[in-house]
Amino acid sequence: MIDTPVIEDAAPSTTPSRRLRRRGDGKLAVGAVIVGLFVLAALFAPLITSGHPAEQDLLNRLAPPSRAHVLGTDQLGRDEWTRLVYAIRIDLRVAVLGSLIPAVLGSLIGIAAGLGSKWLDAAIMRTSDIVVSLPLFIFFIALVGLLGPGTGFLFLGPGELPLIIGFTVISWVVYARLLRSEVRRVRSMDYIRAARLGGLPRRRVIAWHIVPNAIGQSIVYFFVDVGLAVVAISTLSFLGVGIPVGTPEWGSMIQSGRGVIQTNWWLIAAPGAAIALIGMGLALIGDGLDDRIKS
Amino acid sequence: MVAMRTVLARLIQLVLVLLAVTLVVFVLTQIAPGDAARLRLGPRASPEAVSELRHQLGLDRSLPHQYLDYVTRVLHGDFGTSIDGQSVSDIIGRRIGDTLWLLLGTLVLAVTTSLVLAWTAAWFRDRPVDHVIRLGVLLALFLPAFWVGFLLIRLVAIPTGWFPVADLGSSPAELLRSLVLPSVTGAIILTPVLVRSLRSSLIDVLDSEYIAVARSLGVGGPTLIVRHVLRNALGPVLTLLALNVGYLFFGVVILEATFNIAGLGSALVEASAKRDVYTVQGITLLFATGVVLANILGETAVSLLDPRTART
Image (cartoon, rainbow over all chains, first blue to last red; front, side, top):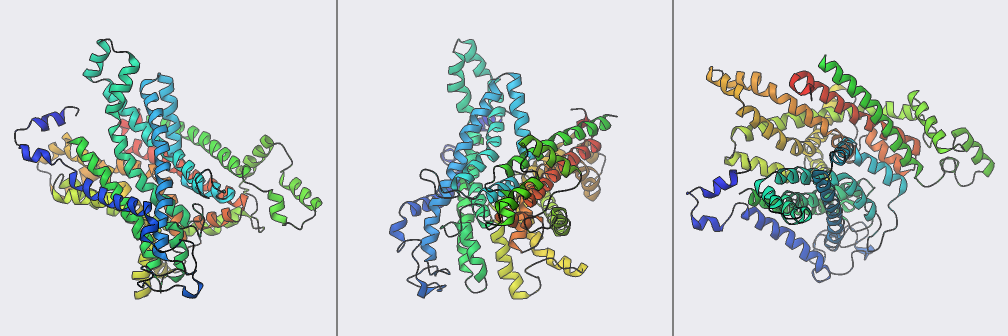
């Protein structure tokens, strides 16, 4: 299993020109363009929208799409396109933090489990078994529903911190397990043994040889995880336990549009399409990277 | 004998995990702001009335004592009363039916679809069909279920008038009709999670020696698939389902909110918005118990199906 890539590489059928374009490049490019456009739109939101996302025009409620309002207006006369674009900032900020923190924490825990004593390993693995077997999203609904979304924290708006904490509790497990098994696999490979025998200190072998080789898969999962987090943020906001209603956030926008689904369906269609599109872009990046690592 | 021991070990584990779950649920509701007695009586009630109710509810006792009270009450099937004075057990009894129907509809549709897709992908391994299924399934993971539900309501239910857009029907035909769109939405949530692992376990089965032997003996076509491949893939399917029960329950909460169905999920969302502590406790505990039970049932079924796994 370990040496299959080497065999593939040595296969004579691979011509030089094919080698330049590696597997997964197509997916990677499409994904990068989609995600890149979203990030650019979030950064330059004031330039591509007219006015503020909270600006109301009560005389112009539920207007159909027009040149002034590309996606029409909502029940309070707010411009849907402006809200859609400003929502990228909230959704992406929470999703990236809610994936980065568990990625770092989970990876450290996984490395500790893979390299530490038997007892530490067993304790970490049993804990992760229990975490996986609990209905954590149900607990999240119960907890945040009872506690309320809070008032925000540092640069985070209301409802953002509970989501980030929730995602951390839920997804550290994936990274911990990934890193643990990768560390164990890499540790027993010949060149690591050679490095140890050659007299390299343990800490240096871990930092420079084991971890870099083990981290590829968790970077792949990180991109998928950010996309899943966007879906989860909007779903929880739709259920009323995420970002509070009234904030420009995709799930909340769909929730407030459900009353006018018959007449102003685009108020629901557009935010949902945004969620699906950015999620798929991130998944394509992850899948493309995965193809690259494997080939 | 081995299976018996597994079941016994699992039962002990069940009790331990359930105790842990009651503790988690109890802590969840302890850190919720506001006084349960004050919330019930409203801001205008006299302090005497509030302290009287606090005493009745046992809120004036120490926390360990309250936890023991709570576990004792739950063991007697008493989940307390909701904020508007109904018994939580009654609420659960009234609402659980719709939730179970949704679970059943989603499971049937999702498992069938997953088996067909995973089977096709495994059979045409590494060929274009396989790539298309794998990419499609990966991308489907990012379709927000509630959004898909609304699209189905707007594009199918409203124009055709074939499907109701709220509540489940009461007569069998009505029930079946009202289950169609929620089940399709539920299958879109669950199928992408199942197909990936199913495909690889089907490939494992297809590559195994006994399939090669069966083939060399001239067994082929439907007999090979049903008697040898599917039977051996049943274990992985059950394990996978058991692992994802928590996710499935979350999915049902989404379905109930999207299609306006008065099941346990919408009861949970409504109760937590109203700070209705006892109802939230009861329903959360029920969902958690369901997850634990499903895990144990799944593992037991797998070890009964395949004696080799029982020993580990």
